[in-house]
Length: 479
Image (tube, rainbow, N blue to C red; front, top):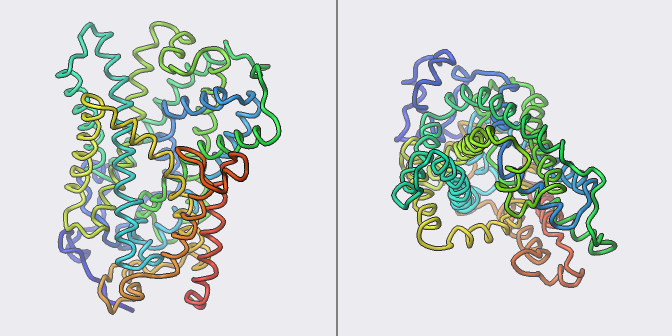
């Protein structure tokens, strides 16, 4: 077996004391970064993963997406069906999570087995870091907008200076969780889930009282147009779980013997349940009010006293999802090759995201541009998740955590010049086919030939997975 190469910017396993009790871990800055977690420091139960993913998905964005499905021209029943089908992609997020306990490493390191040491640095730079920072900025902008409304309800004017302070405060709360890391996330996310569930239960009562369950659009699409809308809706919903190609990050502290079925099930359930429930609430609300302006529309369905509570919940939900994003982006920055402690890498990511947010909110429409570009991320994230999931199946989830730490040319994951061509070609092929099928900001030639039908998600997933099976099976035989 290849020797382990410790990260000089992280303390070594030999210097580490026995894992402290859970309560103590939550109050300490996590020392581990992308280094291997030894078995003696593993702890927790798979069921804890439910609240981690639920807290991050009981949010305002899901309401907006649900309402968008009805605005697209779908009936309520069709919207419900699309929400359920699109949310099934959380099963892939759950599958990726089982590699965490197996390797004792985050996704950003495990994918060295797929792309090679150097190839994985490129993968982490784009899929892991750049996209994460953009999502962080967009979510932070959404939270800040809700916080601006709270400031005005308190009788203050949301001047430029006040807006800057609000953005910095929300970002500071988010980054504090990300800096303290895994222990803090595990401790906070259960009460956050319960608090958000209580708030959205009140929202559900207000929405259901006004829902038109017999709603149908004035002009119902049919034939190719209907299928185009249904596929677009599934892609819109599926983009959420597909963006979490880093689910192993939050499962890697579990004992290696933790049930794979439990890890996968609790992760998938934690994303699936709130996604279905909250998106469905958004769809129901769209039958009663104009969801082109969701915040104003929902205010018509909720009691006046509840409005500040709802706004606070929107901010809290965004903090929860952004803390996970910041945490994984910090690991991705380390995996790119930047020699920096995990806590500092989180702060670096936050600084970049805050700068983008302030520029977008106060100077230009930059965030709108980024938002449009991120609509295309399914072209990249679908194939990336497919290749990762296929590797887990082919290897039967057997990963050598210490060997994954070896970044030298003599290591087992150096492959050819630091690149595993099987992973690189499979991802490239999947992305290329997906790009030809997309119909979002532009219409690819295949989508054009199909009358605008966007098959980017299924085509990219199938091609990437199929290519990886063909190219990697020989190399992995007997692994």
